[in-house]
Length: 153
Image (cartoon, rainbow, N blue to C red):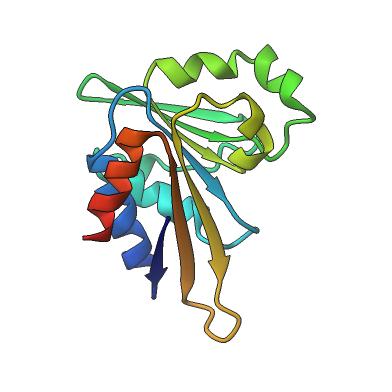
């Protein structure tokens, strides 16, 4: 487990871009936290690694936004509005796990069907400073644990 304290949106985006640079095809990142805790800003930074930061939009109503850059498929999913996991299956959601890199907002709602290896980042706000966010990284899987260790350095 690794905790990153972000003092502003720029720092949130920077750690996201750094993480993106270390991921491979098939990797999954789950973003968990209350509304306004920084998940979408993180995703913006994540996409900036591939120069796609201007393409960020909330997929809340479309569930998934697909991006492709340099033969890499990047999927930004937001499962907040899904009624249940059955709905995720019906849209073919699990197929994204094997065809690129996935960033899943509200991914804790589908954790039961995620592959064994993924990174979960829990976001929380500071009670006294509206700019500060706490990002707690937890890796499931040995290789991704090594990725988290690299972020700590």
